[in-house]
Image (tube, rainbow, N blue to C red; front, side):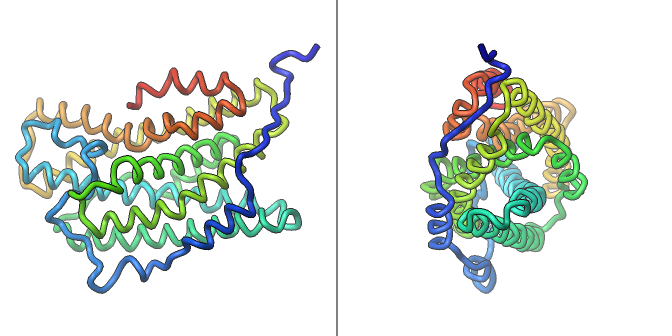
Amino acid sequence: MTTATQTQTTVKSRYSYQETLAASQKVNWRIEDIIGGDKRLGFKQPLMPESFARVEELSFLTPAEKLKLNQIRGFDYLCAFGLVEEFILPFVLDHARPKLQGDDYRVRAFLQFAAEEAKHIHLFKKFRAEFESGFGTDCLFIGPPDAIAASILAHDPLAVALAILHIEWMSQRHYTESIQDNQQLDAQFKSLLKHHWMEEAQHAKLDTLMVEALAEGRSEAELAKALDEYLEIGGFLDEGLSQQAHYNLENLQRSTGRTLTVDESVEFLAKQHQALRWTFLGSGMTHPNFLATLERLSPILRRRIEEVAPIFC
């Protein structure tokens, strides 16, 4: 009799390369359509929904300081997506390269995926430059991107693909649940996130196919090891988020000219680290579609993530 650890994974996907490619081609847009000319960020409204910024929890800040912090969180949001695209792009290309002579729709879908990620990197760079020119003070962000990318890409490809899938569904959740119908946010920032969401919807499907392909034939023990490495990536990113909370404290103090007390700083760091955790880790780990993919690979994987996720929420 075959034991549980010897059972090999076989998953029939819900998605197809042909349908995903067709959908992606329908929503394709140009950077010039959403930035430049009179399409500029404003700094009179929040950039981020409160569910992610969590500035209202900091009662010692004035309304003007809370708005500044919200916009600083918009800055780290832009930078974080620019950073993760830097490792997603080479990973997708590496995944596509070995099978260029295979399924034509698969090849075209992944090359389209890679082209869109390259476009997103360019887009986030342009928005970051616009933020920095309009905000009034320089803001710090973790890095350098190439060192972070190298650390993540050193892991098991399935672990990296799971991390990317987490990010793709995370971005979908952010837009549909907290941004799409939020009338308080800056219109230009919402436009950026809308156009990013439109293409990431297809990326989430393609990355699901990638995860399933990389999991094919793996035993329960091998899947569990890949999940361990996915959690290692999460832990590595969480260390970066802790550092970013410290940077955001410095960013706020520099932009407002106010120095927080020791007690205020301790509260700021604790609450803003947790806000960053929810934004970039918890909201992806608990996305129903991410959990459903884990369930399809092995119910054990889903249960493990459901046990870990509350730390990041």
